[in-house]
Length: 294
Ligand code: ADP
Image (cartoon, rainbow, N blue to C red; front, side):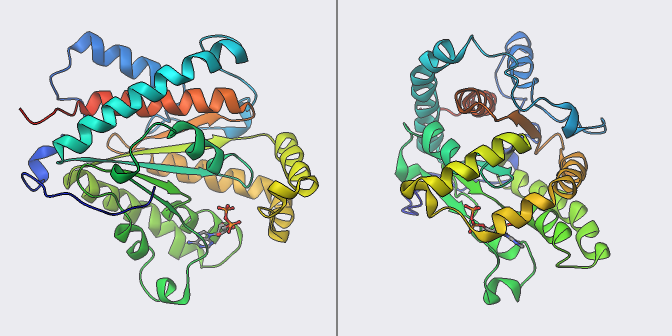
């Protein structure tokens, strides 16, 4: 993943190619309702209240069954995702941006590794956002993000994103409140620009419990193949658990829009997380309804 090799496009994309809610394609109403219903378990509805503390991170709403039953459907979801991606790539006019956020050890890396197992690397662009470099920090906060957005035909995957600029920045007091507060509106405007240019944005928050995070961090410390992922800051960040929850809650409420919705996925169970994220992406791509050029 991460290759930016682009093939010649038949036509350039333009504003007319992306219906803002992605729902005005040729799908029938019943089909759309069914799709909306499936992703509805996790969707943060604009204007509605959200209490992350009331969402059980170990729950598995809508799963086809227990762990074994749910894992058994994952290969067919991978095939479905890869077929939809093939059409998006061949169509070459629109793109999908998947934003993954979550606390340390929430499973962002693992989700990317498992959910995108069957996708074509040429048509995929994955980026992990770290603390801004001096060069990045000398520009506005969306500069580095915009530069990594997917090109026409691609699926872009963000492991962390511009949402760090309203969460990590807020919790760690890296900017004055007036600065990060203004960013909600700027982010909504930015994602609307992306939609206008043909990019559908889907944002997923992986919701884990403090107990499961501790278990995973302990496991990382014990296992040489996982220890490299640990940073001393992971333990410090745990002390700010409640502040992170509030910061995420506000960010999700303020930026879950019709054109770029947030989904909260209970992520204590990796099998459930992989299934739920796959479903959300397949539903989003099905709504986009990409076609092979005829
Ligand atoms: P990861 O945890 O994603 O595997 P790291 O361990 O390198 O990767 O952590 C990346 C760190 O960079 C996180 O603590 C995250 O909050 C921080 N970060 C990312 N973007 C920003 C930003 N714009 N401002 C401040 N901190 C950021």
